[in-house]
Image (tube, rainbow, N blue to C red; front, side, top):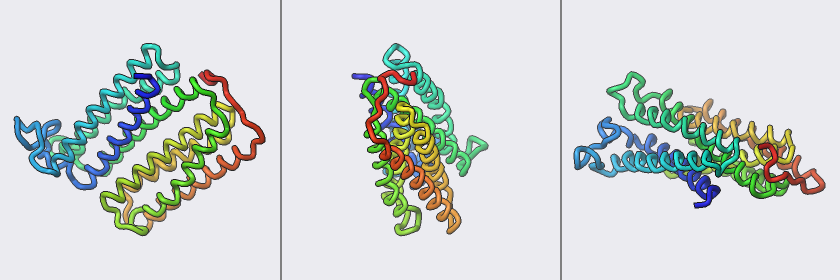
Length: 278
């Protein structure tokens, strides 16, 4: 498989794994395997799930295992010559964080064996690590594309526009603002959040490729605010938390709007050489 396609598949699978993890935590399915990580509560020595709820947890573990293998495979491919130095370093970050992510995943279900327990801290660290891994993979994917195809202001503007269009929907899906924050709404909310984060990463990294430092900084800051918003959403309760989440959305939206406006003010297309910034 082409290295760019392998990276894209790995990045998408990482996002899907994180989304399944959100639903697993929301439904409480992580506790249904009787804290027998990495086993479950069904047949064949507890290897398989015994009911639908434990199947959700078991399925999350299965998808996470496949995703981990993809990350390892992509990292090996990058270090065997398919990726540039910065791509190799991004993949190294992802592959080194993956075992730590697995450990915190175990902590979320092994409530009786480990002192950390099923706490907000563990959930936050688990999601935070997933976001870092996803960010590293998005960066590697974006850089690989930039190194093989010319980057232009049009591409940066389109990525920023995608993010702008996603913000109003994300605000509408804010917990308990207009909708009950059930599994479907939560899945949509986090899926959209990851999509916006990825688009803003494109704005930041491609902006840097064509030497638009202000655009790059604004995109990077907005991307961090989106991830902060997703983390806070997992533990925010009451009006204060709701206002904080909406405030972060508007701040990220404003930064993205500034980025798109700045790019649009450029009178001509600016292109980077395929290996610029390597």
